[in-house]
Amino acid sequence: MDTAPEYVIEMLHITKEFPGIKANDDITLQLKKGEIHALLGENGAGKSTLMSVLFGLYQPEEGIIKKDGKEVKINDPNDATALHIGMVHQHFKLIDVFTVLDNIILGAEDTKFGFLEKKTARKKVQELSDRYGLKVDLDAKIEDITVGMQQRVEILKMLYRDNEILIFDEPTAVLTPQEIEELMQIMRGLTKEGKSILFISHKLNEIMEVSDRVTVLRKGKYIGTVNTADTTKEELSRMMVGRPVQLVVDKTPAKPGEPVLEIEDLSVPSQLHKNDAVRHVSLTARRGEIVCIAGIDGNGQSEFVHALTGLEKASGGRITLCGKDITHASIRRRSLAGMSHIPEDRHKHGLVLDYTLEQNLVLQRYYEPQFQHNGFIRFDEVRKYAEKLIDEYDIRSGQGPVTIARSMSGGNQQKAIVAREIDRELPLIVAVQPTRGLDVGAIEFIHGQLVHERDEGKAVLLVSLELDEVMNLSDRILVMYEGEIVGEFDPKKVSVEELGLYMAGAKRQNTEAEK
Image 1: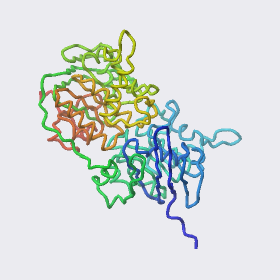
Image 2: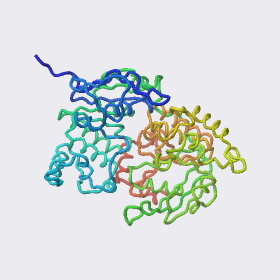
Image 3: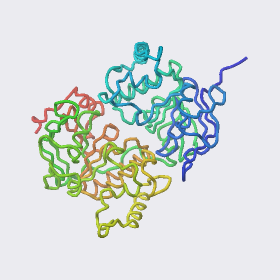
Image 4: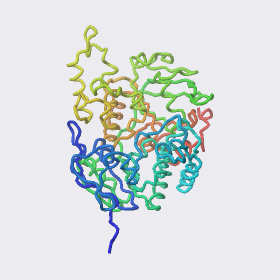
């Protein structure tokens, strides 16, 4: 009697090497039909590499892959698609100027006599969208829809290709709490229909909530597989980091001093429509406190930060830093006046990806006497400085200071930026999503660093979409909705639910009356 094999996918003893690093060292992963299987590990533990091997982007040096019990060769993503394996990447692979529908059928077009059968395709996509509750506007352009919607487009791309095994690489890194909840429901719906999901994440809450089993990797090695129902967040974080991790920030009450940053009546134009993206925002950040701007993505936080840091021009209002008016100052002048900036988009504004790690670490300081003499860079000093930061911040990379930034894992790119900005010892740190895409060990470390800077008398302006982070780290919370500050809260006295209502625009404080 022929019984169906227990596993739809088996990756057995996979080893994958890159220059200077064994990204996957003898890893075995088995996926059951209809389960959500989480792959957990720190940044650079080898999770994305392992999934890229399954999707045919990399060839392993050792090991085999089986599908439904039979050994298969996956030489490229086309082979993976033929085996009904699909993948949603951490940085989406969509074409901004195409519509949703065109992105979904791209590369898998139905043709008749050489003509595109768009009607048939539209019908199929619409049916899939309805069946899985994805609610996507097929005629919208990618550049005009939210990140959460873009992710649904990626999911539809997989479903349109009849994929049975769905790989999600860090799917919630860019979503709001509400979108994350919806994604979880979509994932459960997919497995009910018999799909099997591999889900890369390092967010323990999500893994506990949605997965059936968890496989943990650490520094490229397989640590173990456990049933989610039989484990705890503490146990998983210990497996992942190799030591107990503090899941709550340890900090004393703030002792705010004199103001460092004063913003009065700031407005910033929108790139997308004729209304202002930021409307009449006023706030103060003082020495020795962490002030957090919370809100759902797309409510003007990015434009606010761009105007504050000099990436965009404000249309009105005034910004004062350490007593100097910097409203119209250049980016370098702001930097010299005392502002360091951990940007939201690490690829666009944080790093020069084709420079080495050491070059990126002195981007804002190469002209200081320590690093140059008569206009010539002192390379030995740059190397020494880079090695100090790599050591202090545990930045992991294949070739140390000379690693090209592009080749590093996202979390280690983030650590490099945080190291560079905090080490400049400036009175104001603007930290935008500082732990986006980081694992518990790295989050614990960066939160610790920001609290340490606060205690040294710096002002920290934190902009975050992660409610855990907002509640855990801030001394004061300002909620931004549609470009305005709609409430100010003490994290010790407000609940997550209450904040959520302000973030969604369901409530607002009458700030004038309170003043």
